[in-house]
Image (cartoon, one colour):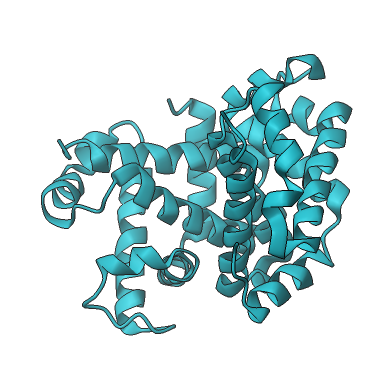
Amino acid sequence: MLTAEDKKMIQQIWDKVQGHQEDFGAEALQRMFTAYPQTKTYFPHFDLSAGSDQIRGHGKKVVNALGTAVKSLDNLSQALSELSNLHAYNLRVDPPYFALQLLSQSFQVVLASHLGKDYTPEVHAAFDKFLSAVAAVLAEKYR
Amino acid sequence: MVHWTAEEKQLISSIWSKVNVEECGAEALARLLIVYPWTQRFFASFGNLSSPTAICGNPKVRAHGKKVLTSFGEAIKNLDNIKATYTKLSELHCEKLHVDPENFRLLGDIVIIVLASHFTRDFTPACQFAWQKLVSVVAHALARKYH
């Protein structure tokens, strides 16, 4: 459960992401594809070379969706309903907790590597909870 | 036996040579207890774990974190035989400590985040790949003697 304190920290961190959406998104995907090659199986139709337009475009999409989630921390289920449908019926990234955990880890590594000490243990905990909550909503309709 | 490319070995050791084991170990264990509070169940005898500040300052947490990361160092010295390096520790974690091996995966991911926050840009995607592989192999070796 996200506490009021968590929500505050998530918002603070997200303010630092502003202006870097595309970069952070692209880097998170790049890291995920490099560290966990099995995730590439979901993108056979993409040019996955470093800096590819498709990765930049998709990274931006992912981060914008997270931004939507940040604005709707009190109602993630509703805010992410469309994406939840997409992941359940269309994309079927499998299994949701596992594969999305890899993206969560990759995104947190991006934050940690850019924010350094500012990615404190407290912020880390709040953000990890946030990404788990997002993954849970995306997985809601799988079965 | 795990196969390591020359590049992976180089990426691992170049980061490791710059790691302050005491600091990073303490931080990694503290983060485990903060980010995944249920892991505190294994450390009831450690005293005050009531807040992130208390956890980060707790001398037992710091000392134990150093111990844990030091053992990673052993794995790095013996990349070609991590299984043997961890045989005794695996038995210990199963028979005496009763730790669910899932926790090894959690700690491994936290070590990665700590490294990323310390090394920032130098912790490249290639570095992350090599290190995620290492923590995964270590976690696997630690779980290997469970019965």
